[in-house]
Each structure stands twice: as structure tokens, then as C-alpha cells.
Length: 153
Image 1: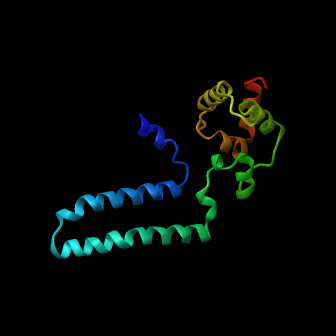
Image 2: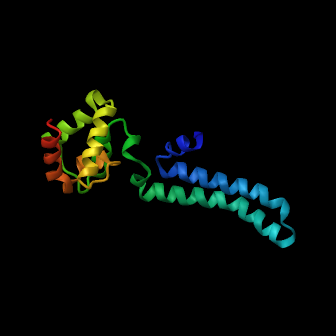
Image 3: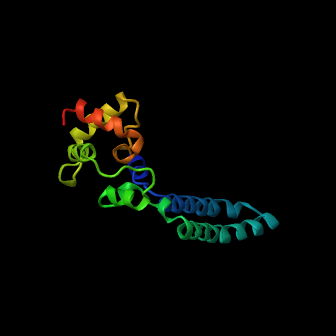
């Protein structure tokens, strides 16, 4: 149960990199004493340079494409995330504002309303796990209007 809850906290690639590097190092610690000769020597070099390689790749990604390292939930207000991306997303509309206030009155998620909205999304064939994407993507303009009507907001 604890592992499942911990995995739900993985929200960005940096956490995945840390988990992957940690698992690789733990596996190396377990396997290294079993190996012998040239294989052991090669494996020692791998164990030493693999984390360095991961860090270099991470910083190259960070330098050239830093936006991929963040999720909307990493921001205090998910609108800032979309302001950062500014690609294919609609500006604020009355429907977005109504749905956001329904979902997060006073900036705090109302679980009952969130479940109602997720049910509506699921019944409409839209991924219910991405409410923020639904609120800001241009492709869902008509669906947002329908959601406001169906949820009687």
C-alpha cells in the first residue's frame, strides 16, 4: 500500500531519473560481488559512469527543453503552467472559469465536484484524469460549453 501511494507521488521526470538511477545502483551492489574477472572490471566502469551519463542527459534536457520537466500540479496555479507553454491552448473563457470554480472553489479541490466532473468527462469519452488539459485545450471548446450546461453551472 505504501509503495502504491509513493508511486502516485511521481510527478515529473526528475523523480523517474532518481528512481531509475537508484535501482541501477542497488542492482549493481547486489550483482558486483558475484561477477569475476574482466566482466567485473567492465561492470565497475559501468557503475561509475552510468550515473554521470544520466546527470549529463538530464542537464542537456533541462538546458534545451526545460518545459517537459514540469506537470501542471507542480505549479501553485495550473494556469501558470499553460501560460508557460502557450501552445494550442485557449485563453480564459467564462466556461473555463465556471468549471474551474466548480472543480476548485477558492483554489482547493472539491472532491465531490471533481468526481462529478470526472464522471461527466468519462461519459463524454474524454480522459477523466486530465481536467486541466480539458479546461485549457482548444479542441474541447464545445465540450466545455456542454459540461457547463449538463452540470448546470
